[in-house]
Each structure stands twice: as structure tokens, then as C-alpha cells.
Image 1 (cartoon, rainbow, N blue to C red):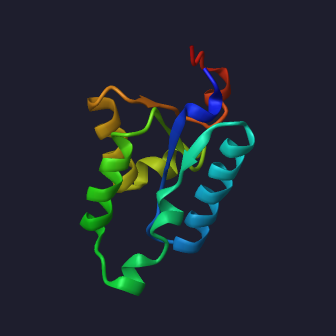
Image 2 (spheres, helix red, strand yellow):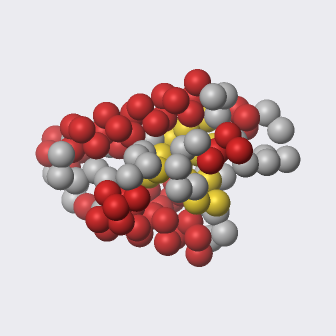
Length: 117
């Protein structure tokens, strides 16, 4: 299977240091594209929509859940597991993926080791 046909959802913290969290997710998505995968990064898709358009947390989560259901796997924006655990949105996304039988990686590097056949 061509890697480009594999769609990976970059999940990770958004709230808190929003600009730094967006940048971490962007870096991960860019790296995945460089590796030949297709990456979807919700942090970039809706960056600052809360501030600019008045959308709230649950609006984002509902939309993100729809994208997750259409992806092949989730890849964390950071390898810092503690940071991921502290993010309630990240944990909700991870739980949804697991319930739907979608693969969840703990690090971006694991993506390269997985047998995609």
C-alpha cells in the first residue's frame, strides 16, 4: 500500500499555550507528510477559531470526532505522554479511536515501524 493513501490524524493538546501546541502539531504533521503519509492536523484546520469565530470546545470535539472516524490511525503531536494525559481532549480522541478500532500510536516514530500491508 502506498503510504500516501494512509491518512493519519495528529492529536494532542490545543488549550493552554495554544500557539506552541499548534506549532508542535504542525511539526508532527509536516514530518508525517515528509515520510510519505497523508496527515490531517486539526490544530491547523481550526487554529484560533474559538477566538476568531466564537466556537467552543464541544464544537471542535464534535468535528474532530468525525475526522477521527475517517482516519486510519492517530499520531500524537508530542512524545511527552504526561502532556498527552493532561489534555482531556487528547484523551477523549484516543478513547474514541480505540472504541472504533482505530490504531493509536504513542510516538510518531512508531508509524514507521508499523506493517501497513
